[in-house]
Image (tube, rainbow, N blue to C red; front, top):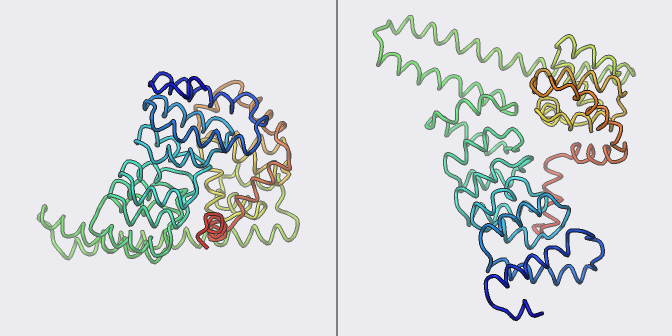
Length: 364
Protein backbone atom coordinates (compact mmCIF):
# COMPACT_ATOMS: atom_id res chain seq x y z
CA UNK A 1 0.00 0.00 0.00
CA UNK A 2 2.86 2.37 0.82
CA UNK A 3 4.48 1.62 -2.56
CA UNK A 4 1.19 2.30 -4.34
CA UNK A 5 0.99 5.69 -2.62
CA UNK A 6 4.55 6.57 -3.69
CA UNK A 7 4.52 8.09 -7.21
CA UNK A 8 8.28 7.90 -7.82
CA UNK A 9 9.69 5.78 -10.65
CA UNK A 10 11.61 3.54 -8.26
CA UNK A 11 8.49 2.85 -6.20
CA UNK A 12 6.52 2.09 -9.37
CA UNK A 13 9.18 -0.41 -10.44
CA UNK A 14 9.35 -2.05 -7.01
CA UNK A 15 5.56 -2.36 -6.85
CA UNK A 16 5.53 -3.85 -10.34
CA UNK A 17 8.13 -6.52 -9.43
CA UNK A 18 6.31 -7.32 -6.20
CA UNK A 19 3.06 -8.02 -8.07
CA UNK A 20 4.80 -10.07 -10.78
CA UNK A 21 6.43 -12.21 -8.07
CA UNK A 22 2.98 -13.29 -6.87
CA UNK A 23 2.41 -15.11 -10.15
CA UNK A 24 5.66 -17.03 -10.27
CA UNK A 25 6.27 -19.46 -7.36
CA UNK A 26 2.80 -20.92 -6.73
CA UNK A 27 0.61 -19.56 -9.49
CA UNK A 28 -2.40 -21.64 -8.51
CA UNK A 29 -2.68 -20.09 -5.04
CA UNK A 30 -4.48 -17.05 -6.51
CA UNK A 31 -8.19 -17.04 -7.25
CA UNK A 32 -9.40 -15.91 -10.66
CA UNK A 33 -10.69 -12.70 -9.11
CA UNK A 34 -7.31 -11.99 -7.50
CA UNK A 35 -5.52 -12.70 -10.78
CA UNK A 36 -7.86 -10.36 -12.67
CA UNK A 37 -7.29 -7.55 -10.16
CA UNK A 38 -3.52 -7.98 -10.26
CA UNK A 39 -3.53 -8.16 -14.04
CA UNK A 40 -5.42 -4.86 -14.14
CA UNK A 41 -2.88 -3.24 -11.78
CA UNK A 42 0.01 -4.56 -13.89
CA UNK A 43 -1.56 -3.17 -17.05
CA UNK A 44 -1.68 0.29 -15.46
CA UNK A 45 1.84 0.05 -14.03
CA UNK A 46 3.47 -1.25 -17.22
CA UNK A 47 2.92 2.10 -18.93
CA UNK A 48 5.06 3.86 -16.34
CA UNK A 49 8.13 1.59 -16.16
CA UNK A 50 11.30 1.53 -18.26
CA UNK A 51 11.61 -0.38 -21.51
CA UNK A 52 14.13 -2.87 -20.05
CA UNK A 53 11.64 -3.93 -17.40
CA UNK A 54 8.84 -4.24 -19.97
CA UNK A 55 11.07 -6.32 -22.23
CA UNK A 56 12.01 -8.62 -19.32
CA UNK A 57 8.33 -8.99 -18.49
CA UNK A 58 7.51 -10.01 -22.07
CA UNK A 59 10.25 -12.66 -22.00
CA UNK A 60 9.11 -13.87 -18.57
CA UNK A 61 5.55 -14.33 -19.83
CA UNK A 62 6.85 -16.50 -22.68
CA UNK A 63 8.97 -18.67 -20.39
CA UNK A 64 6.25 -19.20 -17.79
CA UNK A 65 2.80 -20.72 -18.00
CA UNK A 66 1.15 -17.54 -16.79
CA UNK A 67 -1.93 -16.72 -18.86
CA UNK A 68 -2.44 -12.94 -18.91
CA UNK A 69 -3.89 -12.20 -22.35
CA UNK A 70 -4.68 -8.53 -21.74
CA UNK A 71 -1.14 -7.84 -20.54
CA UNK A 72 0.38 -9.75 -23.48
CA UNK A 73 -1.77 -7.79 -25.93
CA UNK A 74 -0.56 -4.54 -24.37
CA UNK A 75 3.10 -5.60 -24.53
CA UNK A 76 2.68 -6.87 -28.09
CA UNK A 77 1.60 -3.35 -29.05
CA UNK A 78 4.62 -1.82 -27.29
CA UNK A 79 7.89 -0.71 -28.92
CA UNK A 80 9.32 -3.45 -31.14
CA UNK A 81 12.14 -4.23 -28.65
CA UNK A 82 9.46 -5.21 -26.12
CA UNK A 83 6.92 -6.67 -28.55
CA UNK A 84 9.17 -8.83 -30.77
CA UNK A 85 9.43 -11.99 -28.59
CA UNK A 86 5.67 -12.05 -28.05
CA UNK A 87 4.85 -11.37 -31.71
CA UNK A 88 7.13 -14.19 -32.82
CA UNK A 89 6.32 -16.81 -30.17
CA UNK A 90 3.30 -16.05 -27.98
CA UNK A 91 0.63 -18.77 -27.90
CA UNK A 92 -1.79 -16.44 -26.09
CA UNK A 93 -2.21 -13.89 -28.88
CA UNK A 94 -5.17 -14.68 -31.16
CA UNK A 95 -5.56 -14.01 -34.86
CA UNK A 96 -7.72 -10.96 -34.10
CA UNK A 97 -4.93 -9.52 -31.90
CA UNK A 98 -2.31 -10.12 -34.58
CA UNK A 99 -4.45 -8.61 -37.34
CA UNK A 100 -5.07 -5.48 -35.28
CA UNK A 101 -1.31 -5.09 -34.73
CA UNK A 102 -0.66 -5.65 -38.44
CA UNK A 103 -3.08 -2.84 -39.28
CA UNK A 104 -1.98 -0.32 -36.65
CA UNK A 105 1.68 -0.86 -35.77
CA UNK A 106 5.02 -0.57 -37.60
CA UNK A 107 6.53 -2.67 -40.36
CA UNK A 108 8.93 -4.11 -37.77
CA UNK A 109 5.92 -5.46 -35.88
CA UNK A 110 4.58 -6.96 -39.11
CA UNK A 111 7.97 -8.53 -39.87
CA UNK A 112 8.02 -10.23 -36.44
CA UNK A 113 4.51 -11.60 -37.02
CA UNK A 114 5.51 -12.84 -40.50
CA UNK A 115 8.09 -15.10 -38.82
CA UNK A 116 5.60 -16.85 -36.50
CA UNK A 117 4.89 -20.59 -36.71
CA UNK A 118 1.54 -21.70 -38.11
CA UNK A 119 0.17 -18.40 -39.44
CA UNK A 120 -3.43 -18.68 -40.60
CA UNK A 121 -4.81 -17.40 -43.91
CA UNK A 122 -6.57 -14.46 -42.25
CA UNK A 123 -3.31 -13.20 -40.73
CA UNK A 124 -1.26 -13.76 -43.91
CA UNK A 125 -3.91 -11.90 -45.94
CA UNK A 126 -3.58 -8.93 -43.57
CA UNK A 127 0.22 -9.01 -43.80
CA UNK A 128 0.08 -8.99 -47.60
CA UNK A 129 -2.41 -6.11 -47.57
CA UNK A 130 -0.47 -3.90 -45.13
CA UNK A 131 3.16 -5.10 -45.22
CA UNK A 132 6.16 -3.85 -47.15
CA UNK A 133 8.06 -5.99 -49.66
CA UNK A 134 10.43 -7.03 -46.83
CA UNK A 135 7.49 -8.29 -44.77
CA UNK A 136 5.94 -10.11 -47.72
CA UNK A 137 9.22 -11.77 -48.68
CA UNK A 138 9.69 -12.99 -45.08
CA UNK A 139 6.13 -14.30 -45.15
CA UNK A 140 6.71 -16.20 -48.42
CA UNK A 141 9.84 -17.78 -46.95
CA UNK A 142 7.91 -18.92 -43.87
CA UNK A 143 6.81 -22.45 -44.77
CA UNK A 144 4.55 -22.48 -41.69
CA UNK A 145 2.47 -19.61 -43.07
CA UNK A 146 -0.76 -20.73 -44.75
CA UNK A 147 -1.38 -18.70 -47.92
CA UNK A 148 -4.86 -18.60 -49.40
CA UNK A 149 -5.37 -19.35 -53.08
CA UNK A 150 -6.19 -15.68 -53.66
CA UNK A 151 -3.04 -14.55 -51.83
CA UNK A 152 -0.87 -17.01 -53.75
CA UNK A 153 -2.27 -15.81 -57.09
CA UNK A 154 -1.62 -12.19 -56.09
CA UNK A 155 1.96 -12.92 -55.02
CA UNK A 156 2.68 -14.88 -58.19
CA UNK A 157 1.40 -11.90 -60.21
CA UNK A 158 3.53 -9.52 -58.13
CA UNK A 159 6.61 -11.71 -58.67
CA UNK A 160 6.53 -10.71 -62.33
CA UNK A 161 7.32 -7.17 -61.16
CA UNK A 162 9.40 -8.02 -58.08
CA UNK A 163 12.17 -10.54 -58.78
CA UNK A 164 12.84 -11.06 -55.06
CA UNK A 165 9.53 -12.94 -54.70
CA UNK A 166 10.29 -15.47 -57.42
CA UNK A 167 12.84 -17.76 -55.72
CA UNK A 168 10.98 -18.16 -52.39
CA UNK A 169 7.65 -18.66 -54.18
CA UNK A 170 9.05 -21.40 -56.43
CA UNK A 171 10.51 -23.07 -53.32
CA UNK A 172 7.14 -23.30 -51.52
CA UNK A 173 5.67 -26.80 -51.32
CA UNK A 174 2.12 -25.43 -51.59
CA UNK A 175 2.62 -23.54 -54.87
CA UNK A 176 0.00 -24.88 -57.26
CA UNK A 177 1.42 -26.40 -60.48
CA UNK A 178 -0.50 -24.04 -62.77
CA UNK A 179 0.92 -21.03 -60.91
CA UNK A 180 4.41 -22.50 -61.07
CA UNK A 181 4.00 -23.00 -64.84
CA UNK A 182 3.01 -19.37 -65.23
CA UNK A 183 6.05 -18.17 -63.28
CA UNK A 184 8.51 -20.35 -65.19
CA UNK A 185 7.37 -18.96 -68.53
CA UNK A 186 7.54 -15.28 -67.60
CA UNK A 187 10.85 -15.73 -65.79
CA UNK A 188 12.07 -17.29 -69.03
CA UNK A 189 10.74 -14.31 -71.02
CA UNK A 190 12.46 -11.82 -68.70
CA UNK A 191 15.70 -13.78 -68.95
CA UNK A 192 15.42 -13.76 -72.76
CA UNK A 193 15.11 -9.98 -72.83
CA UNK A 194 18.12 -9.51 -70.53
CA UNK A 195 20.33 -11.90 -72.50
CA UNK A 196 19.49 -10.22 -75.80
CA UNK A 197 20.37 -6.81 -74.34
CA UNK A 198 23.69 -7.90 -72.89
CA UNK A 199 24.96 -10.50 -75.36
CA UNK A 200 25.30 -10.88 -79.11
CA UNK A 201 23.39 -14.12 -79.67
CA UNK A 202 20.98 -15.48 -82.25
CA UNK A 203 17.35 -15.09 -81.15
CA UNK A 204 16.50 -18.41 -82.77
CA UNK A 205 19.17 -20.30 -80.83
CA UNK A 206 18.28 -18.53 -77.57
CA UNK A 207 14.54 -19.19 -77.97
CA UNK A 208 15.15 -22.88 -78.60
CA UNK A 209 17.39 -23.20 -75.54
CA UNK A 210 15.05 -21.27 -73.21
CA UNK A 211 11.94 -23.12 -74.36
CA UNK A 212 13.66 -26.48 -73.84
CA UNK A 213 14.85 -25.52 -70.34
CA UNK A 214 11.46 -24.10 -69.32
CA UNK A 215 9.54 -27.14 -70.59
CA UNK A 216 11.88 -29.40 -68.62
CA UNK A 217 11.30 -27.34 -65.45
CA UNK A 218 7.53 -27.53 -65.94
CA UNK A 219 7.71 -31.29 -66.46
CA UNK A 220 9.71 -31.67 -63.24
CA UNK A 221 7.08 -29.71 -61.29
CA UNK A 222 4.35 -31.98 -62.66
CA UNK A 223 6.40 -35.11 -61.96
CA UNK A 224 7.00 -34.05 -58.36
CA UNK A 225 3.27 -33.50 -57.88
CA UNK A 226 2.51 -36.84 -59.53
CA UNK A 227 5.18 -38.63 -57.47
CA UNK A 228 3.73 -37.40 -54.19
CA UNK A 229 0.22 -38.28 -55.35
CA UNK A 230 1.29 -41.85 -56.19
CA UNK A 231 3.13 -42.13 -52.87
CA UNK A 232 -0.04 -41.17 -50.96
CA UNK A 233 -2.11 -43.72 -52.89
CA UNK A 234 0.44 -46.40 -52.04
CA UNK A 235 0.50 -45.42 -48.35
CA UNK A 236 -3.30 -45.43 -48.18
CA UNK A 237 -3.47 -48.90 -49.70
CA UNK A 238 -0.75 -50.29 -47.43
CA UNK A 239 -2.55 -48.87 -44.41
CA UNK A 240 -5.78 -50.58 -45.50
CA UNK A 241 -3.89 -53.88 -45.74
CA UNK A 242 -2.22 -53.37 -42.35
CA UNK A 243 1.22 -53.24 -43.96
CA UNK A 244 2.12 -49.61 -43.23
CA UNK A 245 4.23 -50.74 -40.28
CA UNK A 246 7.01 -49.10 -38.30
CA UNK A 247 9.58 -51.31 -40.00
CA UNK A 248 8.25 -50.44 -43.46
CA UNK A 249 8.65 -46.72 -42.71
CA UNK A 250 12.19 -47.27 -41.43
CA UNK A 251 13.06 -49.33 -44.49
CA UNK A 252 11.87 -46.75 -47.06
CA UNK A 253 13.68 -43.99 -45.19
CA UNK A 254 16.90 -46.01 -45.28
CA UNK A 255 16.35 -46.40 -49.02
CA UNK A 256 15.95 -42.60 -49.23
CA UNK A 257 12.45 -42.94 -50.69
CA UNK A 258 11.43 -39.70 -49.01
CA UNK A 259 8.11 -39.27 -50.86
CA UNK A 260 6.91 -42.70 -49.68
CA UNK A 261 8.19 -42.13 -46.14
CA UNK A 262 6.43 -38.75 -45.94
CA UNK A 263 3.21 -40.20 -47.35
CA UNK A 264 3.36 -43.09 -44.89
CA UNK A 265 3.85 -40.80 -41.89
CA UNK A 266 0.98 -38.57 -43.04
CA UNK A 267 -1.31 -41.57 -43.54
CA UNK A 268 -0.48 -43.12 -40.16
CA UNK A 269 -0.92 -39.81 -38.33
CA UNK A 270 -3.81 -38.53 -40.48
CA UNK A 271 -2.10 -35.20 -41.08
CA UNK A 272 -1.70 -33.28 -44.33
CA UNK A 273 1.42 -33.35 -46.48
CA UNK A 274 2.59 -29.91 -45.46
CA UNK A 275 2.36 -30.61 -41.75
CA UNK A 276 4.16 -33.94 -42.25
CA UNK A 277 6.99 -32.28 -44.15
CA UNK A 278 7.33 -29.63 -41.44
CA UNK A 279 7.70 -32.37 -38.81
CA UNK A 280 10.30 -34.48 -40.63
CA UNK A 281 12.38 -31.67 -42.13
CA UNK A 282 12.96 -29.38 -39.16
CA UNK A 283 16.21 -29.16 -37.22
CA UNK A 284 14.30 -29.69 -33.98
CA UNK A 285 13.19 -33.33 -34.11
CA UNK A 286 11.16 -33.22 -30.90
CA UNK A 287 8.04 -32.90 -33.08
CA UNK A 288 8.75 -36.25 -34.69
CA UNK A 289 9.23 -37.85 -31.26
CA UNK A 290 5.80 -36.50 -30.24
CA UNK A 291 4.26 -37.86 -33.46
CA UNK A 292 5.93 -41.26 -32.99
CA UNK A 293 4.56 -41.49 -29.43
CA UNK A 294 1.08 -40.48 -30.61
CA UNK A 295 0.91 -43.14 -33.37
CA UNK A 296 2.40 -45.79 -31.06
CA UNK A 297 5.60 -46.24 -33.06
CA UNK A 298 8.03 -48.57 -31.35
CA UNK A 299 10.81 -47.01 -29.29
CA UNK A 300 13.57 -48.70 -31.28
CA UNK A 301 12.24 -47.72 -34.72
CA UNK A 302 11.55 -44.18 -33.52
CA UNK A 303 15.17 -43.78 -32.41
CA UNK A 304 16.52 -45.10 -35.71
CA UNK A 305 14.30 -42.75 -37.72
CA UNK A 306 15.16 -39.69 -35.60
CA UNK A 307 18.89 -40.41 -36.04
CA UNK A 308 18.49 -40.82 -39.82
CA UNK A 309 16.48 -37.60 -40.13
CA UNK A 310 18.91 -35.78 -37.85
CA UNK A 311 21.90 -36.69 -40.02
CA UNK A 312 20.24 -34.78 -42.86
CA UNK A 313 18.51 -31.92 -41.02
CA UNK A 314 20.97 -31.20 -38.20
CA UNK A 315 24.21 -33.22 -38.63
CA UNK A 316 26.20 -31.23 -36.04
CA UNK A 317 23.69 -32.00 -33.28
CA UNK A 318 23.75 -35.72 -34.16
CA UNK A 319 27.49 -35.88 -33.43
CA UNK A 320 26.99 -35.29 -29.71
CA UNK A 321 27.56 -38.52 -27.74
CA UNK A 322 24.49 -38.02 -25.54
CA UNK A 323 22.05 -37.56 -28.43
CA UNK A 324 20.62 -41.10 -28.39
CA UNK A 325 20.10 -40.98 -24.62
CA UNK A 326 18.28 -37.64 -25.01
CA UNK A 327 16.01 -39.01 -27.76
CA UNK A 328 15.04 -42.08 -25.72
CA UNK A 329 14.49 -40.02 -22.57
CA UNK A 330 12.15 -37.62 -24.39
CA UNK A 331 10.17 -40.56 -25.77
CA UNK A 332 9.98 -42.38 -22.42
CA UNK A 333 8.93 -39.31 -20.45
CA UNK A 334 6.23 -38.25 -22.90
CA UNK A 335 2.81 -39.59 -21.96
CA UNK A 336 0.93 -41.08 -24.96
CA UNK A 337 -2.24 -39.15 -24.06
CA UNK A 338 -0.36 -35.86 -24.14
CA UNK A 339 1.23 -36.71 -27.50
CA UNK A 340 -2.19 -37.60 -28.91
CA UNK A 341 -3.57 -34.23 -27.81
CA UNK A 342 -0.80 -32.50 -29.76
CA UNK A 343 -1.49 -34.72 -32.76
CA UNK A 344 -5.15 -33.72 -32.71
CA UNK A 345 -4.07 -30.09 -33.11
CA UNK A 346 -1.88 -31.06 -36.07
CA UNK A 347 -4.77 -32.98 -37.64
CA UNK A 348 -7.14 -30.02 -37.68
CA UNK A 349 -7.97 -28.55 -41.04
CA UNK A 350 -6.61 -24.99 -41.34
CA UNK A 351 -10.00 -23.51 -42.17
CA UNK A 352 -11.54 -25.32 -39.19
CA UNK A 353 -8.90 -23.89 -36.86
CA UNK A 354 -9.54 -20.40 -38.22
CA UNK A 355 -13.28 -20.85 -37.70
CA UNK A 356 -12.69 -21.83 -34.06
CA UNK A 357 -10.40 -18.82 -33.55
CA UNK A 358 -13.05 -16.61 -35.12
CA UNK A 359 -15.72 -17.81 -32.70
CA UNK A 360 -13.39 -17.40 -29.71
CA UNK A 361 -12.45 -13.90 -30.82
CA UNK A 362 -16.03 -12.88 -31.37
CA UNK A 363 -15.58 -12.66 -35.14
CA UNK A 364 -18.44 -15.05 -35.93
